[in-house]
Structure formats: structure tokens, C-alpha cells
Image (cartoon, rainbow, N blue to C red):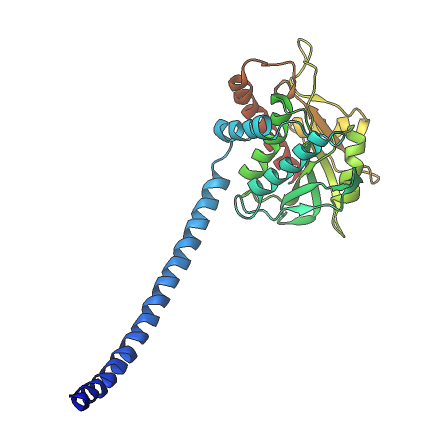
Length: 296
């Protein structure tokens, strides 16, 4: 009985080996097919998601989502207080996540930074590389510091929305969107941009910046108000808003237009966020038009 059982076991063993030799290659092939299918499927989904994100244009829903996160989740953003510094760090993470490789697809660059309260506070930037004159840069700048209210949340959210919606543009010059942790005077912000946000061999052609304001334009004034008033800046602003060609920088003086608008004022639409957001879309379209004009 024992011998018979042993002979049966010996006879069945080669069969098992043969079956395994037949099945294993099939499993490898099936595994490879499944792996390749999943790889290309995920790649296609990534491309589809990227296309949706960068092609939707300017929408109230996108702006509302960002403003809500800045006001409700992040709140105060300033360097001088512990709570404000925590808010700035959360805001920087949100900007990087929203515009970075996993979402819109931009590589996010950080400047060397300025030391304060034991941390380095860095400018964040993303760019649309110019096709004809990539070494000539137009800065689109905004501070991501703020009190955590609708006005300052709206300001930085507008620039984020513009960077996202313009990702597929093909300007002649490079457009670089810069998000700054300091909320200082335009002259100081200009110095930071020129010192820390230009690469070797590049030059800045002009700066368009957005600022929060506590004021409302007087009756009869334009909704857009420029904070910089030098002759070079005024000429730059006029060339952007009028039908003539854009003025080139002269004598190494970089023109800038730091702009305010009622949608970025703490004194307007205090109890009507929806109307503020709707009006912001028209303001964002203006900025988009000026950026594209300056980058040609």
C-alpha cells in the first residue's frame, strides 16, 4: 500500500510541474497586460484631468472655492504673529498644491527667501515660458499675506485663477506669476521681484501687480487705480490700457503697475460675497488681457 501511494505521488509530481510551467508564463503575460493597461489608463486620466483644469477658463466656482479656503480654513496670514505665520505656511502649501504638478501641472519655484522669526519666507512662482523671447519676463505679482477676509483672499485667488486658466497660452515673452509672503509698498515688492525672481540671463520687461485696498474710488474715477505714479509707470500703464503698442523699458528702468480695484477693497460688498466674486471675473479678464498684451 505504501509503495503504491509513493508511486502515485511520483507520477503526479511531474504533472504538477508541467501545469506550473504552463501557467506561470500565462500569469506573467496577463500581469504585464494588466500593468500596461493600468499605466496607460492612469496616464490618460492624468492628461484628461490636466486638460480640464487648464482649459476651463475663469469661473465663479473656482474663485469661490479658493476664497473660501483662504477665509475659512487658512485665515490670518502675516509674519508678525504666530497665528499669522501658521496661516502663511498653510497658504503657501495651498498655492503649491493648487498650481503644482499634481493639479495644474506647473513646476513651482521658490526664491532663496528672507529670514524672519526663525524661518525663511520665500516667493513662490510659476511661469508660462515665452516662445520667441523667453529671456524677457513679465511679472504678474501678488502678496499672499492678508487678514483672512474676503478682500485679500479675493486678491491672491484672482492671481491663482489667472495662472491656472492661462496655462495653455503661448506668449512671446515669459509670464511669471509670483506669490509673495510680504505685503509691502510697490517699490519694495519690485526690488524683491528683480532681486530674487529673475534667473541668470533674464531681464524684466514690466510688472503687473494686484493689491488689496481699504479705499473706494471716488465717483467718476476708473475702477482700476494704480498705486505707482512715476512717469515711467504711468506710460507703461497707458500703453497697456490704450490701443497703442506696449512701451519697452528704457535706461534699465523697469515699469510697474500695482493695481487696486473695488473687488479687492475691504469696504465694498461686505455682505455680498457673490456679487464681489461675479465682479471679480470681469476684473480678472482685464488683467489677463494686459498680461497677454505685455507679453507679445
